Length: 155
Image 1 (tube, helix red, strand yellow):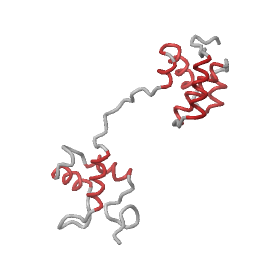
Image 2 (cartoon, rainbow, N blue to C red):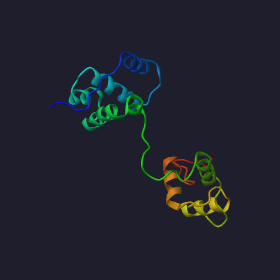
Image 3 (cartoon, rainbow, N blue to C red):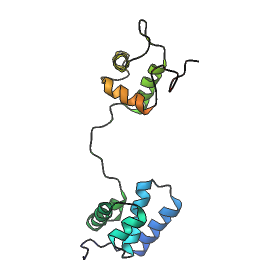
Image 4 (cartoon, helix red, strand yellow):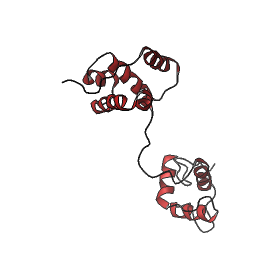
């Protein structure tokens, strides 16, 4: 099958991609994009490129089309991802985790996600936060709200 989106790199683009692969710290996704474009420039099939790079066939096809439509830098760049923005920034996350690591309030044996969420709002760490967001944060940080088996240690 004849490809409608052919990758033809200039000598400068080819040298730049090779240099970036060798010298720049790249994420796995960035490295794979560079490799896909270099292999596509050599005329390899999408199936072979997918096999050599570990990418999916549709990823190779999309990247080839994106390069043909928008150019090299657009093909290498991350597109914004869908979804809601994070509810907490790094500082707020750290404060909620620190709160979870502190002693539980009077009358409670340990912190609950609901109690942490309400205390974070009360102490103006965040404007509003749900207990499920707090629960996901604690799960991400391996915090157990006071149990010594994982996360926080009461030594």
